[in-house]
Image 1 (tube, rainbow, N blue to C red):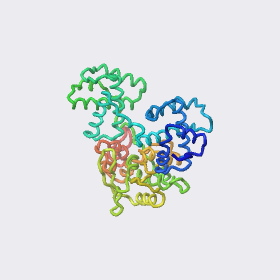
Image 2 (image 1 turned 180 degrees about the vertical axis):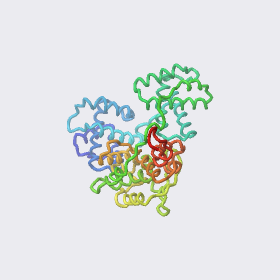
Image 3 (image 1 turned 30 degrees about the vertical axis):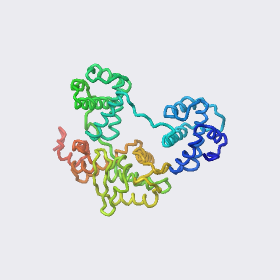
Image 4 (image 1 turned 90 degrees about the horizontal axis):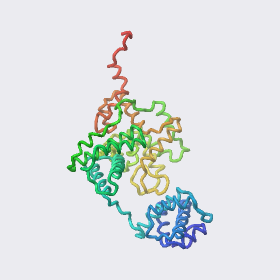
Amino acid sequence: MTSTPCPNLNANRWLLDSVLAPHIDAFVAHLTDGRYSASASNRYLSCIAHFARWLKQSHIALSKIDEAVIIKFLDEHLPRCDCPAPVARTRRDLRAACNHLLLVLRNDGAVPMPVLGTTPIDEELRNFDTYMRDAQGLAVGTRCIRLSIVRRFLFWKYGKRTIVISALQASDIRKFMAEQLARLETVSNASSLSSSLRAYFRYRTICGDRVQGLAGVISSPANWSLASLPRSLSADEIDRLLKAFPPDLPSFRRGYAMVRCAHDLGLRTSEIANLALTDIDWKNGIITVRHNKSLREDIMPLPETTGEAIMNYLRFERLPTTNPAVFVRLLAPHDAPISAYAVHRVIREAYHRIGIKHGRTHALRHTVARRMLEHGSSLKEVADILRHRSLNTSLIYAKLDSRNLLAVALPWPGSAK
């Protein structure tokens, strides 16, 4: 290990006199490879020194370090920490540094890799997830929601015992849903519960279980489809949004290009985040959307304004990285992909700068649909551009088609003809 891993003498002594000492060089190399700044690296080293001191005081062996130990350090030690100053006490930095350390220790073989759950419920959920992914082609987000709800139900019913589907009774379903809704009585929660349990029982039917009667007792909440108008942005709001990225704004070209992708192409935030350099055919002016909600590949024309915005970002602002994504991180680790939430945050902050109080990035997709209808496009064309698998998904936009609605509207009773 380097003789002085961090400038704080106390922290340096704690590191040298700990079970982590042989792995500090690897930890520093990990931060260097991630291109963390010198100040961030020193901050994380100070955090690891604090963790190292607590490990020694708690007599915790190196091989015992895992997520549970880190949680214990943060939840039990940190609130009543009396370690001598200067010492790192920022929970966010401590959690991030400890997670980086755990990754390094596992890569070095000093700490065992996490063991996948082996309980009957874990095995059942793995099989259910495989079915949703391979047979139904569901997106990760949908699968996670359903797995979470089914996990709660199975644990509520069976705990660590063997799962016996034939032992389930209709009263079990009703009681579970009643308890869940008592905690959060909203339409969205009720919809998630009912749809997830129905999906699970459909899976069990395919497995050969006779559970049709159980699915029949699951009632859906009153939620009339197409009852509301899709929220879109006005022409003035769009104009102000596109001007909400002045040159003095950090990484303004990246933000402007993201908004252009959402506004011009109707891309979802996840599709913008996953857009790769190889997805853009500059010569032919087309873009391929590969990581979409329906797990298909869609080829779309690349508008000139969108292409110019992306090109300016790539030429003048994109940081050097091995990441093949178009839009990359501004902060270390620079080679890691950005998330859909990062795109959502960029657009939401642009909303707030122009006075739009909500943060619905989906409003830009609604705006694409409204604009197409106003220019005479059909609902089928809207469905194609927004890449809806079913035309029924696009029916809500019929309410925005004022031109055709006027043609079929009946005169108001008593009004002049």
